[in-house]
Image 1 (cartoon, rainbow, N blue to C red):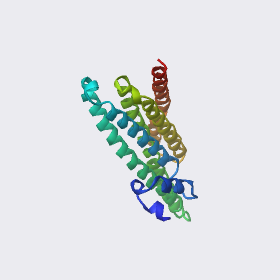
Image 2: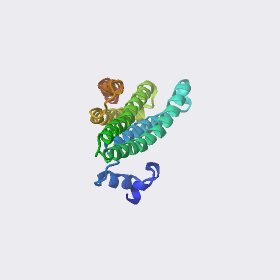
Image 3: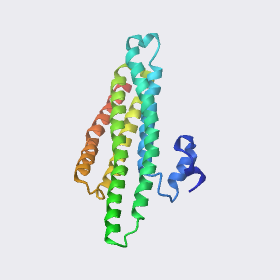
Length: 214
């Protein structure tokens, strides 16, 4: 483990994280990247909300305050999900290293792999849920947002879209190792909502572009 990977993600520099992401190490990978897309989406929503304040926007103060607070919380949660994803993937690797010399060991190993894969799929599924929540904030903010920064609402929607699509493939790559039928079904359903999120994010971006040219 390098010095960079030993640091919690919140304490790493952008360069340090990207160096580790580019390195030949198991984690971080796509799952952590999905969570960081989500964190950026939330941060952009919060930034636009903070620019949508003052006398000009007084009638929307309550809504904007709620959006800003929820976006800040979502950003913090997303960073935790990035940490969780790295830990979950490490658990998958460790499960594959379990002994398989006897029938009992083979069964125990298979159960451990399934459980670890379920945890590894659960984190990006949570990222999908987070992307849905942040996208809803962007949708609610856009009609009242400061027109000078509405391009950042589109940026937030696109970042949430990237979070959702990146998270989806990180759910799907683990599904084949999950032997519990109910868990498999639930995680599959959670991943399927991404198509709808993509359409909603695209609609936000399209609306922003219309406003920019009107």
